Length: 499
Image (cartoon, rainbow, N blue to C red; front, side):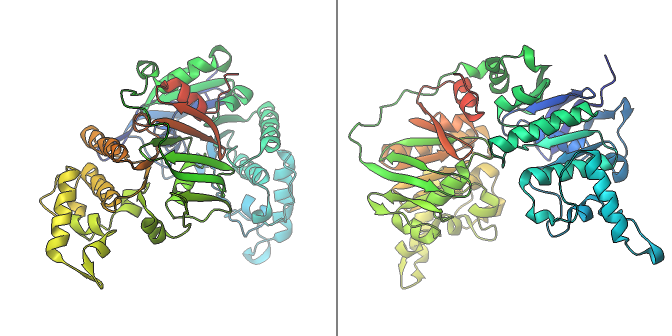
């Protein structure tokens, strides 16, 4: 067996109490395309950060060509070993292709000034060496995504790196562009380039990779030749055998067949999703599942008033849903738990009571004056209903644990007695007990006749749903009624075609 081009062993990375990677392992052989797969939160990004020298592991070792990885401070040495082409471009859009290729190492002429003639010639040589057909004088912002990716790959190769990490490279490409990318990858492999290919779309792994490594719950699970791992087995490894056969909770009354429709969307189209038709009835919980680039969060945020779609309509109880106006959406009957409680959900300098009641101040007073006693009583009631562990309404919300802070965000969403409750990653970053408490609020809202839309990467959040819609590349591709199994849902999320 040849010496691995890149090798990670026993990688552990912690961020405070959070263990982002408990047992990261990877062995990439020269000249192969090696897939790294795992659900959101499996540890893929953390492993890439360690592999590229952006962060030091707390434990474990990284080796290239059998030699220890360079010191973290020696960026030039790392560039000669490995490079990552991310979903978001790392090129400077206003510079030309040539300027981006040779940034910070431009050839100089007399007097130490940049020689633009040499710059263009050297850039053209780099592009020709790696068969990248792009005009060196073109403005990088004007390039198609696939050409920009190839410029980034050529830049990495020009430093001497022969190990290229591609992070979700097909997320913004159409089918023909994806096929062209794969053709270029195969040609570069023949020239001695090695790839680590990270994708949520498992069918691509089978098209372009020879080996696959699976991470789950921040741990290495398996590494195997792609040809020896059937798709069902790969999904099973990502889902976890212990949970793959566990059915969704189905011990509940089915939604009444004559339940009135609360939310009805038709042909909704935005930047991240298109042609979305969906309904949610009163007393129904509908889940939205999909990978990080599926468009599920953007769709939910649109329904909550954060964005304006390019086309289509949405009605709540027969009335047009206001787009692009959170206050108007709130008045229309929409309550929302946003995706990030720190950035979007809480005002850290305010108290628990102020945060919980800020969406219903007009109910607590007249003409802009809020009755302190009434507000305090309302907040006390919310604290009791949500089982928020706080000293009282006056305690600063910044003093609370993650679970209790998230309960405050949920309390505010419920305070207005919404007819539609939009929950985006409602249990992210909370402990098990808080998670169960938050999910029990979903059950209570359902019993009260509220229409609930749950958008989550957590399968446990989706088990409360009467049905789960799966988005893939911005479209709804599957619907799973209550009673689904983990491997079935994950197969839809990852785009596996079971034929």
